[in-house]
Length: 305
Image 1 (cartoon, one colour):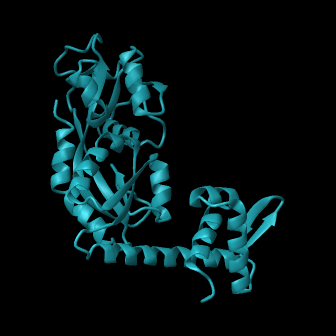
Image 2 (spheres, one colour):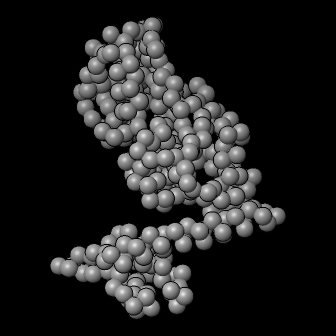
Image 3 (cartoon, helix red, strand yellow):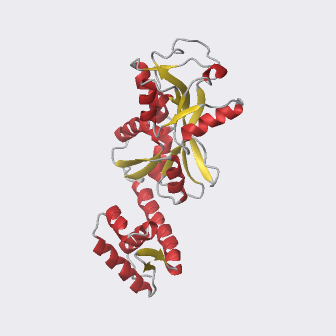
C-alpha cells in the first residue's frame, strides 16, 4: 500500500464513484488514458483486481469496493489536515465546498461576498442542486456544508440555523385577489396553483402547511423551477407559493403581488447541515460563525420590501 500514491487514490475514487473512466477524466481534467494507466498501476501495486469490465460496463470487485471506502476515508482526512493547517496562518486560507438547493442561490452569493471581503484567501465553491441531489451528496460526504430548509430524516446530521425562510402567495398584478385583504385559505383553494416538481423543498413545506390546516391544494400545472413558476404567474396561468427570497425583486418592481392571505407568510428556516460524524475544518468553522452573525444580517436585507 505504501507504493500507492495519493493521486492514484484520487483517480481510483473518481472512477469507482462514477463507474466510468470518461467521467473521471472529465472531473479531474486529465486524459482517459492517464486515468486507465493510474488505476492499472494501483491494482498492480496492491496485487489485486479493483475494477472489472463486463459488456463495456465497469463493476467494482469486492476488493475494489473495500478500496473505495479506504480511499474516501484517506482523502477526507488529508483534506481535513490541509484545511486545519490553513486556518492557523496569519491569513486563513483554504477551500469550502457548499451545496445548496435552487432557492438558496437567491441570497447565499451575497453572503459569500461579505465573507470574501473579510477572508479573501478562503475560496468558496457553491453547487446549486435539487433536494434529492443534496441528500445524495451528503450521504457520500462530497461537500463541507449543505444548505437545506428541512432537516434530513434518513441520516444523522448536525444542523446550524441560518436565516428564516418566509413562504408567500404570489399572483399577477391584475389578479382578482391582488387588492384583497385577509384572504381566507378556503377562498385561496378556489384558485389554480402552479407548483414545484415532486421532491422540491418548497413543495414539501407547502404540503406540510396544508396538511396541518386540513385543506387540499388544487394543482393546475407543475413547473420545474422558481423562475418558470414566476413567469407562469406573471403570464396569468395561476397563483403560487414560493419563498420570499425568490420573489422579492419582482414584488419591489410591481411585477408580482404578494397576496394578503390569512396564515401567511409561512415561516420556514434555512439551515447549514453536515453529517454528524464529520469534523468541520477550521476554515469551515470560520464560515459557520460568520453566517450566524454578519451573514444572517446580509441574508435578511435581501428580504426588505
